[in-house]
Every structure is written in C-alpha cells, then in structure tokens.
Image (cartoon, rainbow, N blue to C red):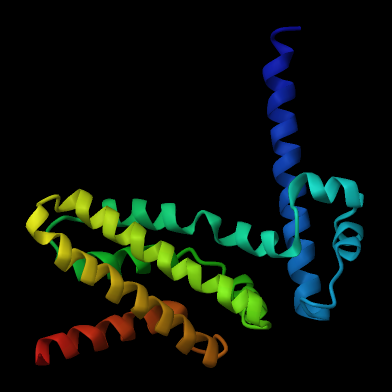
Length: 200
C-alpha cells in the first residue's frame, strides 16, 4: 500500500493540472467569443465539464484566471536574465532575456489575453502591476549579477527603462494585432532606446 501512495499522489497532481488547464482554456475561449463581462462562472464551469463548486476549488474569480496566466512570468524572466552571458551590458542582457522567453510564447493565446485585458478599466489597471513586478524582478536580478552598491542607481534606471520598453513593445504589437511578431516589436523598441542613448 505504501508503494501505491506515490502513484496515487502523482495521478491526483496530474488530474489537478489537467483540470486547471481545462478551466483556463475554456474561460479564454468564452472571453474571446462572448466577451469578458458577459461570461459567467457557470458558463466557464459548464464548458470545462465541472461543477461550480469545483471551479471555486481552483479559482475565486474570472480575474484570477487571467492573473494565473501571468503569474509565473516574473520568476521565469528573472531566471532568463541570470542565465544570460555576463559579458553584455545590463540593457543588452535584459533585452536578450526578453527575446529568449518570447521565442517560446504562445502568440495566439497571448493576443486573446491581451485583448481581454484591454477590454475594461479594472483589468487595464490590474494589468499595469505586471510591469511594476517586471521592473522589480529585473532590478533584483541585475543587482545579483552586479552587487556593487555604487551601481544600484544605474541598474534601477535600466530596470525602469526596460519595463517601459516592454510595455511600449506590447502596445505596438497589440496595435498591429499580431501582424508583426512580439519578438520583432521588442527588438525594435530596445534598438530605438539604445540609439537614443547613443545620441545623448
């Protein structure tokens, strides 16, 4: 019986992940087709093939579904920065970390989620916290690489600028409605920033 316990735990965890993914996918489809405001929790539960009670075991609200999609981004980005070769400038390091993460991005899903996040004022406001988190994570990662106290102010500026560049790149990509890749938008925005800094 003791030997069966790890198998049962593994099966339960697999089932939990599959249900979580099914709820998220169902919600995103409904948000895209019916609109975020019009989509009810009952409709999401029905589309995912679960009860309303089971839905609340995984999520407390519709907004939490969107938040879960972005939840792992700051830590994944931090790891991408720390994995970069150390013979680059801080700005190049941050740019290349973004490009590495975006290479495996699910573009279609990202377009749907971006459209939803822009669809009402509350979601737009909460979405801005993502950039503040990215700024803080960037600063912490850069300070881990360059721990000298004298560099902290400059590294904070790099973190602030790179978070702004990411926001502008995503805005540009959204305006293009995905016709231009997000990778290209990020490359162009960082290139524009570096060109302006060189002129200064």
